[in-house]
Image (cartoon, rainbow, N blue to C red; front, side, top):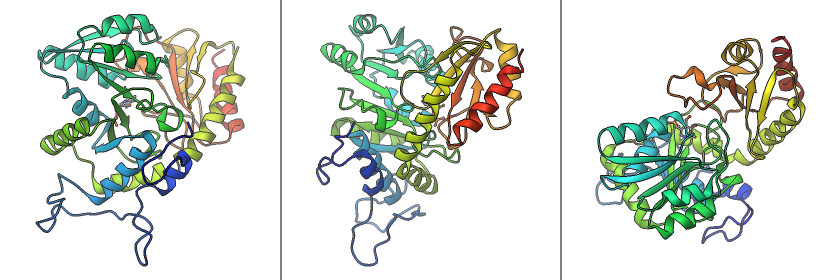
Length: 361
Ligand code: PLP
């Protein structure tokens, strides 16, 4: 994970890139940070022309995330806008291979496109690399999250990318949970990375944004074209905030991950829990409460620090019983509560959660 580089900054560590990439030139009176460029148009004759085509605040964000992922980044209005733009890369009638357990919005977007006859979706167990490889035959795209939301299954990205490419399929990876600090899908052979920048990248639960990062200029140009035509552009202020968040991602994630690992260790064997799921990295943990929906619903009401809320990746710890959403896959246990571990002290988080778990009796 410590080989991130760009032509300008060879072999710098990701922690350094997160801080230095996308900055204005170091010349007298240049601002240290790229400002919020609030303008809808530009004086004609340059490269930007109009606010739907480009914005210097986007560029700063894109250079930074692009440096971390090792590709060309295109910022979008939300994670779903980024996902829609990538699914649009599939030619009409093409087949998309996707995990059975994916973010509900992604599954809904695939289902809607399938109902409209725009694509065919084939769902697989993403941990079964041989089954994924077999499904790649005739596919236009293999799309997956790893770890998956909220089952936390992990895919073998390199093996799946090899199999997909043998069949000429594009490989797109939603890297929202891992972030480029823990996993760089493009370096493992993927063609496209997608982010809900709403989560860890912005990191403070105050922004909705998305991003696509591509390995090739051709895919980047096609994605820019989607954004320019469909208009799913991020607001300059949101982009500024997302970049500000991205600057501190390495320290935030390091702390959140350490706390998550300690919580997993301390929660193991708690009698109110059937299971503690953790892929071994990152700061998302899924616990399965014994007894299903009712005790899990009680749990999320009985804490004072952990907040029952959807979304994840903020500085504050949140958790959610995922099956409260009608769209969530029926194979996700009713009692599964997804924890997004934030930056509070581990003893406080553990004490709050265990008090609520103990009260379930
Ligand atoms: N991908 C994953 C893994 C997510 O968890 C989410 C949102 O929860 C999205 C994509 C969608 O992102 P957004 O809510 O920013 O549109």
